[in-house]
Image 1: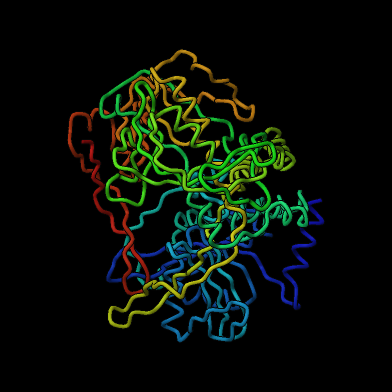
Image 2 (image 1 turned 60 degrees about the vertical axis):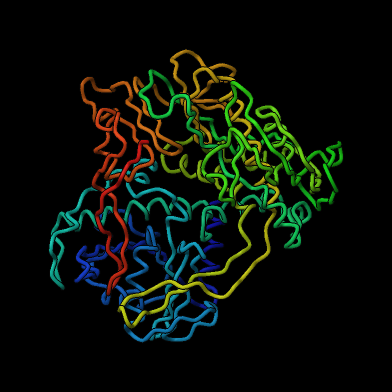
Amino acid sequence: MHSIISTFREWWDTLGGKKRVNYVADFETTTDPADCRVWSYGLANIDTATTLWDVEIGTGIERFCNRMAEEDSVCYFHNLKFDGEFIFNYLFRNGYRRTDSSNALRKGQFSTLISNMGSFYSITVCWKNGKRTEFRDSLKKLPYSVSAIAKAFKQDDPKGTLDYDKYREPGYIATAEERAYIAADVMIVARALKTQFDQGMTKLTVGSDALTEFKTIMGKRMFDKMFPVLPEVMDQEIRAALRGGWTYSDPRFRGTVVGPGATYDVNSLYPSVMYDRVLPYGEPIYAPGLPVADPHYPLFIVSVTFTAKLKPGHVACIQVKGTSHFLATEYQTEINEPVTLSCTNIDLELWAEHYDLTILSYNGGWRFHGVSGLFCDYIDKWMEVKSTNTGALRELAKLMLNSLFGKFGTNPNVTPKIPVFDDENDIVKLVLGEDDKKDPIYTAMSVFITAYARSVTIRAAQDNYDTFAYADTDSLHLLTLDEPVGLEVDNHKLGTWKKEYEFDQALFIRAKQYIERLYPVIPFVAEHVTHVAGLPRDAAKYVTIENVIGKNKVVFPGKLQPKRVPGGIVLENINFTLTLK
C-alpha cells in the first residue's frame, strides 16, 4: 500500500514534467535589532537525507534563495511565521511583487496564504529564472516544538543548544558544534515529515490529512451525501453553538497550596466520543421555540434566553462571551441579567443538572438526523497503529486521531493577511486583505463532538466534586491518592482514564496556569519534579511553589516577544509577570 501511495505522490509531483523536491530548512538569525539577518541556514532533502552529514549548511539569506532557485521544490520551515519574515524582506528588497494567485505566478512574483489571525500556511515564489518554491509551515503538520518532536518520535539526535546572542559577522562560517546543532534541528523535522509522507499524508495541514483519509475510508460520494454544504446563514447559526474544551480552576482551592493529589487524562477523549455517540448528519430542519428530539431527529441546536444560578456542590460550566458584563474566560456561578446563547441538547441537559435555570424564551433552532459509528473504521485503523507501534508511527496515529474532528468546524471566513513593505520604517507589515469566504465543511459535527467531550470531563469532575481542583479539556487534577469515583482507569483502552502522575503539592492559579510538585523520581532533585503550566518555557524554569506563594505578583525573565525590524524579526527577551491575586 505504501508503495502505491509513494508512486501516486511521485506522479502528482511530476505533473507537467516538473518534479518537486521536498526539503526542510531552518534559519539561524542574529538577535541585534540594528543588525537583523540570517547568518546561517540548514537544508535537508526529506526523501534522501538520513544523517546529519546529509544536511547542507550555508551562509545568508541570499545564498539560501539562490539555492532554492536551482529547482522546483517544496520547502518546510518549522514555524514559517518567523522564518517567513526574512524571506519577505529578501523578496521585497530584490524587486519581487506579491500577487493573489499562486497558480498564475510569473517570474519575479510570489503569493501567500496567511490567515486573518496571522497564521502562516505557505509562501509560493516564482524565482526570476522561472523555478518555483512553495514554502510551507511544518508546525501545521507537526504541532510541537522541535525538542518535543525528537522525544515523541524517539529520534537519536537530540536538539542541542546554541548561543543565540553571540556576534557573528556577515559571512561567518559556523563552527562544528554550530553546524551539528543546525543539522540536528533540520533532521528532526525532516525525519518526522518523512514518516508522514510515507503514510500518504502530504496535505498542507495534519487536519487536511485526516479529513482526506476519512473521505477515502467513507467514500467521497457517501461523504458528500452525509455532510452536505449548508447555506452561509444556517452555518453561522449552527457555529454559534461551537465551543472548545472545559478548562476550569475550582475557586475552592485556587490560590492556596494544596495536595497531595493525582492527575488523570482521558485516553483519546475526542475519538472516544466520535466512536459511539449519536452524531449529526444530513440537512437539518428548522424548529421554532424549543426543538423536540425524536428517533428521526435525535439532536438539536437551540438559541435560548435565560438566567441561571449554580446549584450548591456543583462545578460551573456556562461561559458567556461577547459581552462586557462577563469575563469571557470565566465560568459563571450566577447570571442575573438575561443572556441569549446557542447550545446543543447535550449542553442544555448538562446545564440543567448544574444550574437552576430560568428559561425566558426558546428562540428556535435546528434539528438533526443522528447516527453512531460513522468514525469507527477510521478510529479502529489508527488505534491499531497506536497500540502496536512505538515512536514515529505511534505519534503519527495520535495526530490522526486528534486532528479530524476540528476540521469539520473549519471557519469559512478565509479573509487573508498579506505582507506589504513599509518604506517609511523599512520593515514588512501584515495588513488585512479583501473579504473572502469558502464553503463550510459540516460545522455541526464539531459542535456535537466538543459538546459530548465537555460533558464527559464535567461529569467526571462532578462525580469527584469533593476532591476536584482543576480540569483542562481531557484531564482532571484530584486532591486525593485514592481511586477516583466513577472513572474506569486503564492505560490504553479508548475513552478510559489514565493516571498520569501523583503530586505532593500544587498551586492552581487560574485556567491554564498551575504549578505541581511531583513526587521525586530521583530523591532530593527538586528541579526534576516540578511541573509548571501556562508560562513561557524559559520563564517556567525559575518557578517553584515556594517562590510564588503569598505574593500578589512575581516577575520572571524568559518571555520572548517578536519584534519586526529592518531585515526580519528579532525575539526580545522581556520579563513575564505572573499575577496570583
